[in-house]
Amino acid sequence: MTPRPFLILTPSPATTPEVGALLAVLHGARAVTLKSARRIGNLDAAAVGGFSTHLPSAGTLLYHIAMIELDWLYVEVLEKGEDDFPAEARSWLPLNARNSAGHLSPVTGEPLERHLKRLDWVRGLTDGVFSAMTLGDFRRPRIMDAYDVTPEWVLMHLALHEAHHEGQLALLV
Image 1 (cartoon, rainbow, N blue to C red):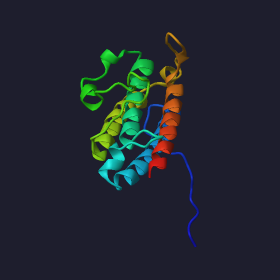
Image 2 (image 1 turned 180 degrees about the vertical axis):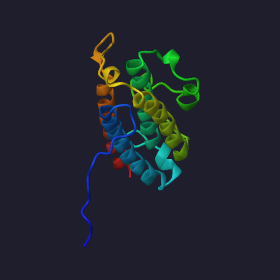
Image 3 (image 1 turned 90 degrees about the horizontal axis):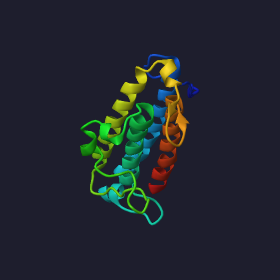
Image 4 (image 1 turned 90 degrees about the vertical axis):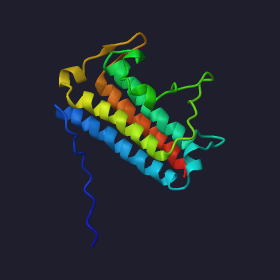
């Protein structure tokens, strides 16, 4: 008899259980993204950098996921500007999130492994900031020009954002 699956959320290491629980959700979304990305990467290099008539390439989607995570982390959570991104950000993310037409900046010619390392690099920054955050700071609103936002909401949003784009990746297989 096959054992029944035990579905449980195991919080990621963090100062508070609330932060750890949402970090675990974010990591769950990433695990699904990586599974789809590896299935695409196993097809051939063209699948990572190629274009569909309806969807961005896998490389473009993976780049976008990393760029948006870095942007929300620095601008909304840390309340800094793009000029305050870590020095390595320019080598990992040289393109803007969107091109002049408002579409995702196309990313081609990079192997899957580079995209995966980029995602790991950004996630390391995110984990470092959030895992040390107090509950008070996690729930403290950041006052932006267009809206107020908490880091708690940012983690939820990043998980949903990644899940949305993972669905697009899954369609490319």
